Amino acid sequence: MEYRQALEIQRSVHAFRRAGKVPDVVLTVEHDPVFTRGRTARPIEYRVPLDAVRRAGIPVVDVERGGDVTYHGPGQLVAYPIVDLRQQGRDVKRYVETIEGAVIDALAAFGIEASRRPALPGVWVREGKIASIGVYVKDWVTRHGLALNVGVDPAHFGMIHPCGLPVRAVSMNELLERPVPLEDVEVRLVASLARGLGWRVEPRGLEELEEHAGE
Amino acid sequence: MNRAFTQVVLPDLGEVDGAVVVGWLRRVGDAVQEGDDLVEVETEKTTFVVPAPASGRLAEIAAGEGKRVQVGDRLGNITGG
Image 1 (tube, rainbow over the protein chains, first blue to last red):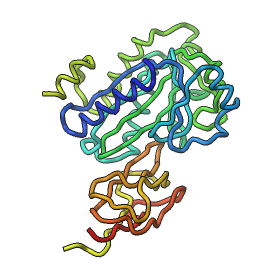
Image 2 (cartoon, helix red, strand yellow; image 1 turned 30 degrees about the vertical axis):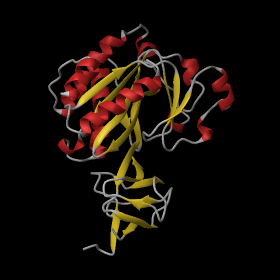
Image 3 (cartoon, rainbow over the protein chains, first blue to last red; image 1 turned 120 degrees about the vertical axis):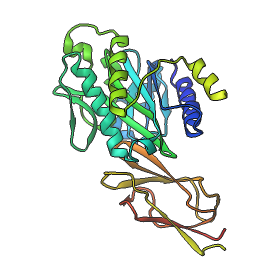
Image 4 (cartoon, chains in turn cyan, orange; image 1 turned 45 degrees about the horizontal axis):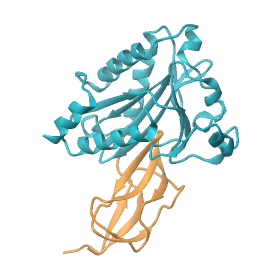
């Protein structure tokens, strides 16, 4: 899905959640190629000139989440938990650790050992960074979230320093030396998020959600 | 009755080691309504929007862009109503 379209959906679900019209929601999506810059992005985070990025036909979008520049594209599972943190102890750090923990649990189900690194939010494997985190909180309700590399084009990620760091972006496929269906990872990740956040999950289509909010 | 000043402080965000002011969404002198988005701070890769704690005018920015602040620190003042 095109990034800006997904962003609009995310913002409207966030507004529904703040108004108490829907329960906590996690939106999952696979984006068309895009670079997004968080609130603290700096120009040095590109390995190639910004002009070259634009010439490659990949849009660059400034967004309100925390963090620096990142890439989204095919083969990457993006999850946007829309969570009322007033029901999760009003703790931003604990929330970030919960979503990191959900990614670590989901990866473990595929035999991948991943971990946190002190002072470097995100999820890491020995070879580099496998998932990025960037969150926005307004009225204690979250949006944005996490991006997990299942099988991402390394040439695209090669254009940036992910999250402003001189590190390599790593995909699950590369570590497992076989393609993993994105849907399989999605099921595991949503289950792990639900466990971490104390949810009982009901799958809903976007239309159902909008109808529910309109009632 | 209006208090002369209402302090804008960094709310308790949990077990975080402070936050950095990303930017003010209003300028000194601007009228603000209680609950308006006033200033964004970042911690743990999270942008947190601090709302205006009162209606009035943004009288002072005590912690500008890039400033590191701790929970409870004063970010600015709102005056009048």
